[in-house]
Length: 191
View: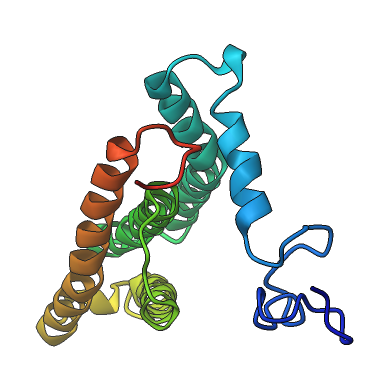
């Protein structure tokens, strides 16, 4: 049934109007999208489920990790040009590897079908981005040629802040990894 405002009435509950569904779908729910991805599991040339999982992980992580590694090389060159001390370079590398970890963990969460509430996901992403940004600024050398990381209070504070980011990332990553490999096929919904 179609309503006068272009929605599918009670079936959709207004999701199409809010932009949550595809306009060409017969039902305003995500049913046709799930049906299309389920059909991908039936394609003959993709190989077995393990091959498809490996290929899907490779494709999902290639560009984010590749870009982060290229930025890591640029930051190492920048650190060499600025004659940064070892703790400053370590902070820059920690920030870059945390960015790689965030990309990989969130990709695993999506591919594994984990449901993370949007509010917590937003808090985690904003917290990680701010921590990586502040980390990069504090790693730069000051006028005396040493980074601010050498001060004990700053190092302890950042150790606590990094633990606050890496603990949930580790938990989400492990749950996403297990959920991804437990699926019967990457293109089939969770049972």
